[in-house]
Length: 195
Image (cartoon, rainbow, N blue to C red; front, side, top):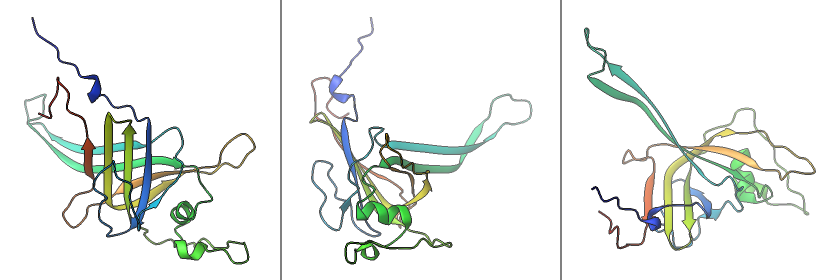
């Protein structure tokens, strides 16, 4: 009979996590168990929907005459995204991302912050760092060296709902041709030692 190996420590529940942003070119914090330091700035509270890691790929199949199954498939598009809703809409870092305004432009004068949205937005690429935590069982980090918010949802302001900025962040290739760097810390168990 076949012996099925199972290891509960290898399951991930995204029980907690966070996100940070830094200027383009900022290096990765490198370890999901270590608090990122400046110039990394926190995104603050993220909605209980957590972080959505997106995979969007298109392919082209080639089926020769006389066959019903392809003999080759080529990936024609491979896109990685991250989706989240930032709840701390009063945080400078979050407003800076939502409105494509430098953080320095959000400094209040006599207690009042003012800025204008342009009719001709320019690209606003930054570095992003996301961490997913499951206590001491699982710690996962995603470093996006060149990311940009490519989708923003409507913002609802009402009495029985928290306002939030819902974003889709697209990962673009860096100078090495990579879009996302992964950092995982998983404890070794009797059932699994990393191979």
